[in-house]
Image 1 (cartoon, rainbow, N blue to C red):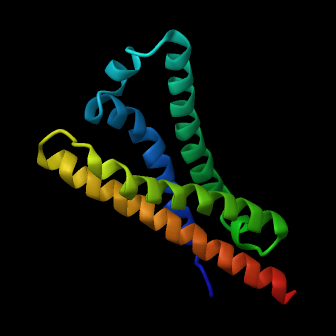
Image 2 (cartoon, rainbow, N blue to C red):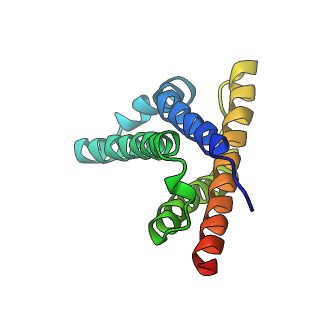
Length: 144
């Protein structure tokens, strides 16, 4: 299976986009900070820290894809490990997205509705891209 580096770069740009848009979504769509303020101070900081982890991981994964796409598909054990980690992250996100999030409502309006569809498409495409990369890397690694 051949994967074009441009596809990896495009995925990276998408991941960076999700990192940049995530704070807006938390604030505008989910009114997240209002809910976080209801927590005890330590739990507030824990919730904010995990939110920063999500942004940081999305940005970091995207930066790797943009800057070193060939290294993410070179069939080395490190490429298998990194793409495996990223695939597991996005597959877990997609499972969580569809298993738990439909129970909640988002604000009315076309921008939120279509934005939700767009984000789901991005998450699914990241999961598929990195699963393909894991498969590609394992195939290269076992062939050598």
